[in-house]
Length: 94
Image 1: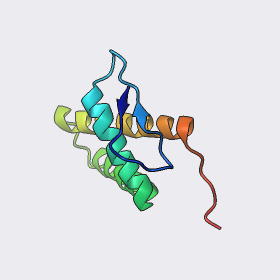
Image 2: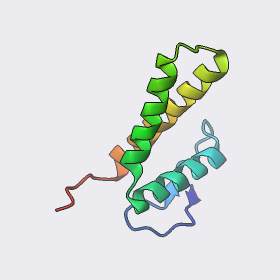
Image 3: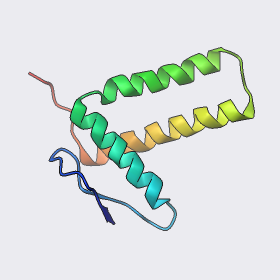
Image 4: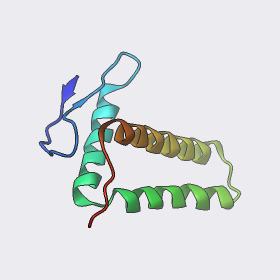
């Protein structure tokens, strides 16, 4: 496990560094996720990401480079959402 440099109460401070994962990319992903959670803009970020995938799919450009970027974006979002499901709870703001 790698300890996070962040001390935010809403996000666990350790990430999984199993042999099948790249610890650096997991660490960077968790740092970015933590930033978006603490600034309260994860949902707008996710909506923007999904909008990018939607627009690029609708454009008809199916070049291998763009498909790879789209797949990587969706995989990262799924990984983030799985992490959130396992470690966080969404609560109304009221």
